[in-house]
Image (cartoon, rainbow, N blue to C red; front, side, top):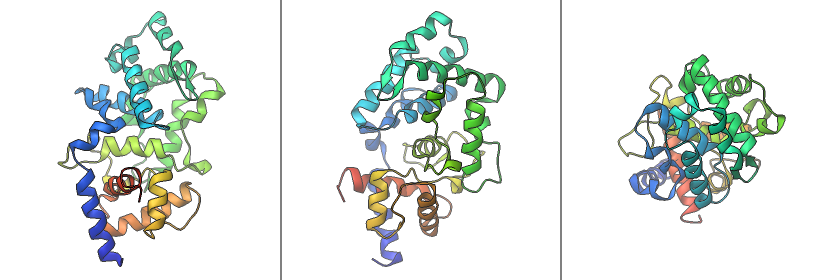
Length: 254
């Protein structure tokens, strides 16, 4: 395919997958349970944090997180007692356990009480072209309170080469705005043009087959290469193509 044909092909795939039916089998269904901005943010952030492995298990365990927080995530984060926080002890999703979950709740409280919440933390670098500095700084602030070293692995850092797939997915959910009803578009202060495609095994393999990515590793350098090529097709909304790449990889085994 030439550039025009590739764009038409991917635009059609975006239209095919970027619709409410996508929500039914995707972890984004968990934050869609809520209507309050802070509830959506926290539910989305925690769901994205454990978004590796089988999708059914991600959804099941993300719903379990919401249940532990009484299905009122913001109220729980701000007002929980020590006894209530101990309810998170038993949570496990792969290597993310109760210690990690309890810290995330405590750090989220610090974020909302002292840093204008998640949106405030991700809005600190308006000149950051692709959120690389933003994500790096977010991790520093998120772990500014006492924590166990084991928990730091659950927030990636692009400055160390990570493609930061889960955080970029969370940012897509929060920032991207259209009329399809999948992404929330809650954070209007961050332009969609700064978003990066959540790069994982599926999207990376499809991107390579389509000639959008040459680098073999799924790291930050690969993400920047993919970003460059996706922005050629839509400079204002490059991450809409995440629906196409993910759909082709997961649903069509492209």
